Each structure stands twice: as structure tokens, then as C-alpha cells.
Amino acid sequence: MDKLLDILTRESKTITEEFDKASTIGEGTPQEISEFRENAFRSFISRFYPSPYKITKGKIHDSFLEKPSASIDCLIVNPAHPNLIDSQGKFQLLLADGIDIAIEIKPDTYNLEELYRGLKQGISVKELRRIKGPILSFNAPSHLLEYSRQIPFFIFTTKTRKTIEELVLYIVEWYRQNNVSIENQLDSIVIHRVGIVRNIKFREKFYYRWTIPEVEKTGWFFEEWNDSTLAGFLLQMQLSYHSMATVQEDVLKRYVKLFKIPNIRRINL
Image (cartoon, rainbow, N blue to C red):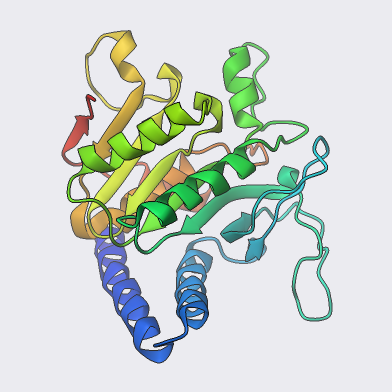
């Protein structure tokens, strides 16, 4: 376990270097900077979700809405997804029932315009529905069954507000002003080499070993991972509802679920 954590800590430095290099290589051309960063990030994800998973970007479609999601920087495509690719290896159609995770890269969420754009992109993903969720139990609560039919959505950032409380306050206020339901809100913001802000929507998804009132098991929480934030990110992804039910755990999940979550606090606004 310590070896895996050490590897992920080293990877975090690599991503920082790749993002910095992108700023130098693409200087003066924001589009190129974004593309270099996205490629570096997808390359990292692909090492932990290797073939037959596919890592791509694009818009997601479902069977219920004519309008697809906004274009998302990083999508983890389940091996069960039809291989609908063109001669260039790009997906011609991405279906919600075969997308495990959606991640939007926003290097600077200190910029409120970028933060709010990411929240809007998240809503466009959350409005989609898988025809069938991955929960096999007939006794599962209806709200979890519905939640499992949505695609987990994360924002990955390297720069944010001065304090976590300030970041969450802006997010909560924006959601309030735009009447966004809890179901259509993002699941987490990953702040590279700092930690993870989690939006726990249902008490059944509270996995901290705390003895607290049930009413306090939902809301916003911060996990301070520091240089091990990528380890926490992989844990978050593995604990999310993927598009397909599996009989056995992924190899990665068997290990990352053993990580000790450091310095957790509930954010009271």
C-alpha cells in the first residue's frame, strides 16, 4: 500500500510539471495550453484505467434527451461501450450507459467565470440518465437507484479560492441562485496537491468512520490529502457508481479503499 501511495505522490509532481510545461509550450495560445494539459491528464487516468477501458473527451448522449451534454475533457468509457470510433480513433457517439466517470479540467477555479462554467457543464452531464443503473439489489432505496443512473461528475483544478470555505460558499450560492437540485450538482472538486471537496448528497454515501447525527452526514466535506490527492481522487472514482455492475471488485479498488483518509472536516456554511 505504501508503495502505491508513493507512486501516486510522484505522479502528482509529474502532472504539475506537465501542466507547467503546457503553459510554456503553448504560450500565447490558450487553446494549445488546454490541449496539452488535457492530454497529460488523460494519459495519467489511462494508466489506472487501462485497455479495454478507453479514455476520451466529448459530448455524452442518452436515450431520454435530444440535447447532449456539454463537451467534457476526460471521460472514462466502460469496456462494454460499443466501439463507435471513426478512422481517426475518435468516438462518433458516446452513450451515457457506457460512461463510468466524467471529469472536467479547470486549472484555475479562482476565476469565478471558469468555476461557474464548470458547474454548468456538470449540470449538462447530471441531467442525462442511464437506462439502467449498476445497483443489483432489489431492496435499494429509490433515491439511490436514481442516483446510480447518473454519471459521476468531478472537476479537477490546480488553483482555487484562498480557503475551501470560500470556494464552497461560491458554489452553494451559485446553485441556490440557479435553483439547481442536489441531484444535478457535482460530486467532487479535486484540488491538485491540496485535497478533495466532496458533496455528499445522501447519508448512505457517507463512508467516514464518524459517530455523528444522521442529519450531518450529508453536505460538503473536505479531505486534506496534500501531495497524495491523486490517491484520494482514485478512491473517489472507485467508490462512485460506474455504468456497469460487476461481480468482482476492480483490482485498483481492492487497494485504494484501504487508503487512510486524512484530516477530514465538515464545511458548515
